[in-house]
Image (tube, rainbow over all chains, first blue to last red):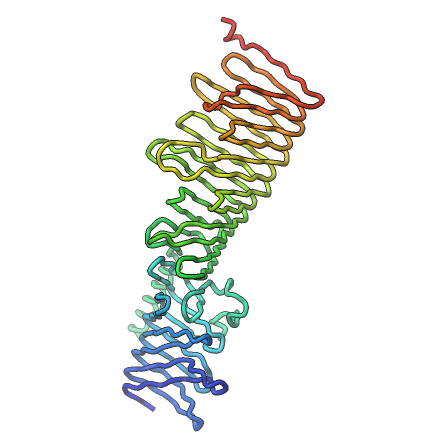
Length: 152
Length: 266
């Protein structure tokens, strides 16, 4: 189904916790009979919600989601912005692994705060509030799957 | 098709650009910079403190306010924010550690302490540096034309505070153990060349005392005299200009041989 401007939210069906929201300028979406949805969206903005209540806003050229899967993929001029404390991440692609509450960013990843900047990394993983981040090989056990993003 | 090829070309160039770019951690004040890491992690502990871990071949970290530069295969540290600058609170370094500390004014020939070791830890509150796994410390004090070179297995050094004006020693006190080899040199009119070996060495700059313990062998030369000494313990007292004022030898056997240099007899 082709859709012009719109907005959707994905919640965890077991807990009812909000995982992410997305608004788009144009989209091609498929809806399941149970209300699940997937597809691609262009010129997107939205927010990612961590399991500890963190909220990070984003914008990107495109977004992709699949029915019955919790992840959200952002691509093209991706920008994430955490508010408390303030931090910004920019890169070419982000996979928001909602189940692991982990941002998996790739392609010229730069993270910047009022105090410092670091990058560009080929790949960087982070908590949704961007207060903890690392290259995938050092990402803390318990922060989510250590599986490389490109295996998904 | 042409457009598609063009996009592939642009994407490849961008990817090559990213891969070729040096990854840098830098504070806004430009006083802390870390490079050379292949792996990295950072955790914000609170509004002012940050922990970091870098792994590389080697990781190179600089703190200009603290006049410190360190290289190692792994550096794990804690920094605290002071305005726009991050200052190092503590660090653990491992794998081919090389570090440099400067004291005194950068414009007026600062004193430089260089350390090499297998592993190192540094705590800025106590200005204490612990080195293990084969260590070497060299200090060059251009203002007084003095230098030392000390090697051993392990060392603990208390560093002088970063003053910024007068040149001063970088090391306030030092303990070295394990097959110690040392050499103190002063060039110029009041030349001095003192070297030797011992099991342990301790040096207290404010007190002006150098103590050597265990299998001590001392060999020294100034403009007039040259000599050698063997002892179980040697205590060398120094004046403010680092001239030896007394040498006390203890233990069995304690023997010494002093010779007057030819130049002195003229």
